[in-house]
Image (cartoon, rainbow, N blue to C red; front, top):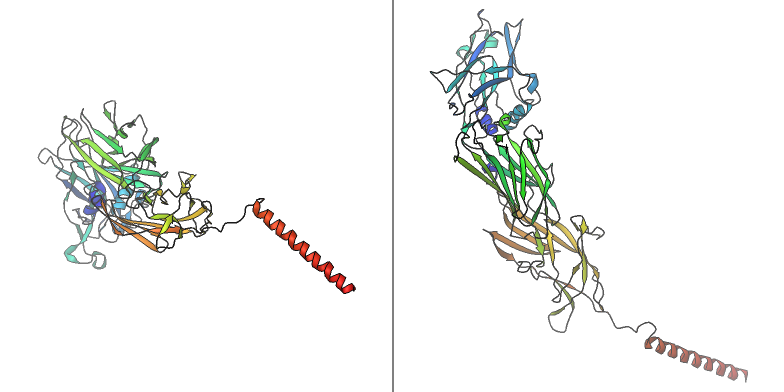
Length: 530
């Protein structure tokens, strides 16, 4: 499942997991025997950090995000509050109880950065090289582990918090408070992951699955978490292969950080596009130097857009877009490389068999009147337009251009290609010679379902009150409900042509009637006179 493919060991998820069970750590109680004072400190411990194989030591730093508050000139503990810098990121945090941070909150803290926040550098010893400790004031901290070349560590949430002695309520009973000891084990990941999303526009958050030919599709490729490389052989790049139904806009390629900052093309990354193979490569090693160490543990997003072209495949056939992430597990050696993959699927549909062999062939047929038997005659040459409104005033467009006229073929068939899910209206605009227009606007509805990976599972085509249905299993389509719609035309009665023999006949007849009438009139006058 696509969502399950997201990297659950990434720093956001792990921060949430660890934050959901915030541990408490020891600190001295106030020397006057009262509730804690602002001099109280406790020890936070982070264990299980592997040594670095490179030349730069691992850096473990704690930053306070929630602090204890004190009254009575710092002699009485009064509660907790979010550090000013993170009040927006942690606006929903309940500081009256244990802190449970969500993925979104930790993401917001990391995005806000650590400038102007006091760093508490955690130290290890030769006796305990994988255990890092620091003495810190009472509060909650986010710990960042950086410069570990072979392992990507997730940020972790740890706390130094007051605990009522003997289970009593310290504030009500006024008894002495102590601070508990504890450890926080840092989770790790051995590799970054890649996640790809297709969207209807640059700012959309939902994925798009069906498209019109001519539409622009926007893609986001997320690398998370960003690794740290200290050695001489770094590898981090994506290779994105587009299907023939997609035309890449090379100039649209851009890379942004989790904080929304744009990286510089040519400086922070390079872009190469092989048009023949339709392969896009975005490389974060520029002239042998890896450019993302400052973003370790965070994420970057590669974005670009592409236009769905006339080569797009239809119905059950997806217009795929495959991405491969290439990386090294250890930049101090060569050959210890890994890959990650993800794929998007976008679909466009036809009605009436616009592509030879389509399962919708024969769905729409233009016919003449029923003959004396039970069948109707195919009627070629009828012209239709496709609209987006019932009144048929707005032409449907593909790529900003009105969809071409739909003309019935020799067998009367009508074929429309490149439609996304939605509602359309088909209306005849020019009838074949000798036939009247069919004034009815035929309502066409396309609906589809997809699995969690974005693969098409079934779709329906409904024309007015009739429906056709199709099931897809492993790329094989099975019609489950047949749909055949005939659009009849009425044959016109043959009339004399203007200025032809018909006009002459009418003229002679009219004159004869007038002569006879005149003769009768004068005959009656003579008789009357006598």
